[in-house]
Image (cartoon, rainbow, N blue to C red; front, top):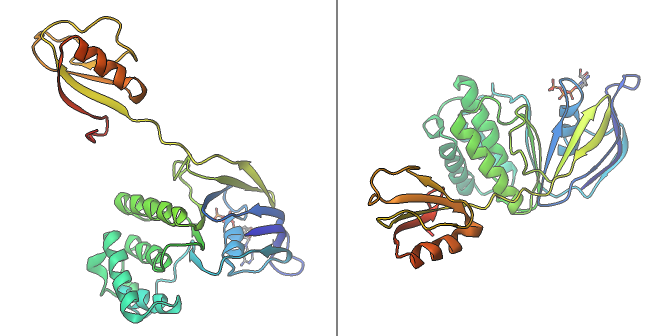
Length: 284
Ligand SMILES: Nc1ncnc2c1ncn2[C@@H]1O[C@H](COP(=O)(O)OP(=O)(O)OP(=O)(O)O)[C@@H](O)[C@H]1O
């Protein structure tokens, strides 16, 4: 999907909120939009989502499916959370049973399962936001557009993490996810592109490759009953750093690139290996 020379003003004589915006929004990509308050980020996201039309310019290659979490959620509708989600799932083309199952799954995933039968108007702000986010995730993952305007705001920590995961899943499944969030740490380093909105213009401020996760450090628990061999590769960190009891196992942590050499040196010096794992605790 592409935006070409897109402009938007409210009213024929209103000031241009956006002008000359060129954005490239390929599939399987995570795109962040940044800018100070009132610069036009929500306006841009509404144009991307297709719920508003440009005053000039054109938008091409729109994916067939769009999910959108608006900055403000219309919470005063006469539905329970579950009925509302089923209704929106039906609008998105899901069968009734699938829509109901998905509604339940997403409410559970966001920790709002017990509010399925609560009326929208009676939900707390945080739980309303969970419903607003769940409605955007009801459809199958796949190529499509996911537009999130401050969708994390109001969610608790666990739900924010869950939304991060959901966004990553959707992007991995081919979606184009475009988001605004006031927290600069939100999905930081995972964006394929970052666009800044300022004084009506939209500029690519960074185009980062998808961050490669750091290589895990490897932890080796070993005992030798004697001092460590000299000249170990990778300068391993040891715990306890200065053992009083040389028979006590040592934990050595080293970059994965040096773990084989370290292991070889320990075995060659007749050390006993108790445990081998990554720093996150995964056994390797
Ligand atoms: N429907 C509308 N009618 C008239 N003016 C509007 C409308 N929507 C937005 N604007 C104006 O467009 C400008 C940009 O607003 P927008 O909400 O897009 O910015 P934003 O960057 O998302 O702001 P915030 O960070 O505060 O959410 C503002 O001056 C706003 O008053």
